[in-house]
Image (cartoon, rainbow, N blue to C red; front, side, top):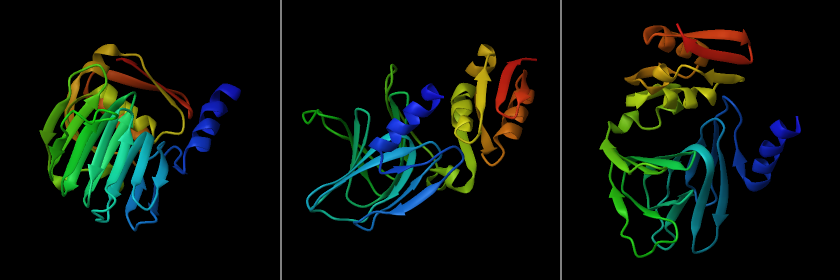
Length: 225
């Protein structure tokens, strides 16, 4: 129990806003900007008269930022810093890797503490993957597809199944053990429901040569068929 509760208790001490499994939370910040947290996400707010900063400790968040040239809005996710004046964008941070996607407006992305390195600029419909062990990736997608989790959907294009399972874990009140490496490595595209993660995972497994076994309502094991 201590091992399970300890990290969550520590997270709540660090965070100003935090969500649990399958929970969404919206908030209006003191400058009028709005934030929507996805499940299992946490942020720390650092606001002053001249600075507006949100630290995404973990998870996903969608931001709609009020313009204020005197106090640029910054989101810090690990070693990545996203700076904006006024825009709507998503930041996803997990396992040291950040993903930024802009719905409209423009943002600048840079490494934390590296003022000498020019920021990468992203416009509406652009996304950027930073951090982790691999090289950064960049691409485009329809602005309406950004942060589709707000509508209970997960939209993926050419992503490994393991990443989809990582997202589904945020919506399932139990553990998901992925023991089929071939299935986990398959790259897929599609639109998947987040409202019933067990059904989504089962359908995904059945379509790609794997099987989901429910040991209990709290444990799902994905193995070869």
